[in-house]
Length: 127
Image (cartoon, rainbow, N blue to C red; front, side):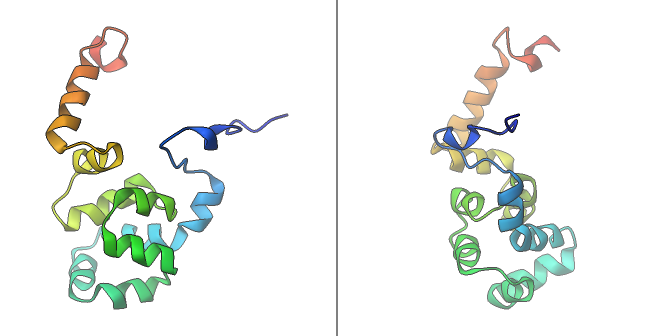
């Protein structure tokens, strides 16, 4: 019996979030989850290096956080939902993250979303 995720690592331009990525990104995602608390967001902004050390981020994760690059964060094991909490510290939202992931500007990304929503076979268009 093959895994339901068999072959998903072959999707160009993606970093699938599976069990191994969940293990890899545990410290990063735990840190990002902590940003639900305003005091934690403020502590991170005041001392990012100390805050990362508190959560035991590995060098790849720490560099990804410093770069604020979504693709690097995903490759370091970040989960998009937790990364949204990190991005929020800098006033970014999911459209900003999507634009970074796809290599286009935020207005271009939003236009792609709007166009996709107009497709008759797109589930959201049926609403």
